[in-house]
Length: 141
Ligand code: RB5
Image (cartoon, rainbow, N blue to C red; front, top):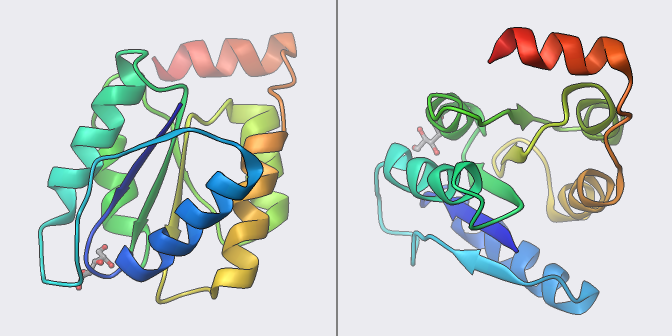
């Protein structure tokens, strides 16, 4: 189950992400927002992040205008490793090295074509399970 959270800046791109997840057969839980009307991104970041931290959802995808505010807010939740990625290399590396459990993107930074490739890379890349990466993640916690 994928937790989704966005603000007004990310709303349109999140609709594309939802269609893509459906096509790929992923289930998701949408924590809002529900339109392009101005809202406060920490509300949606926290709701989706809490669902991942509690185990209700396995991973999460967050979108705001830049991806920055929503990732900062999500990372305040214990157990969340939200990675802001605007390229596939970073999305792959953050899964392999950081076992990132949330992906954040900025809808004003990249277009839907690249965003969906980043989503695929994030969802399809397993954690390396290397001892050094486990040690470093433990140090974060
Ligand atoms: C909203 O205008 C914008 O500030 C927000 O989407 C995000 O970019 C914040 O980091």
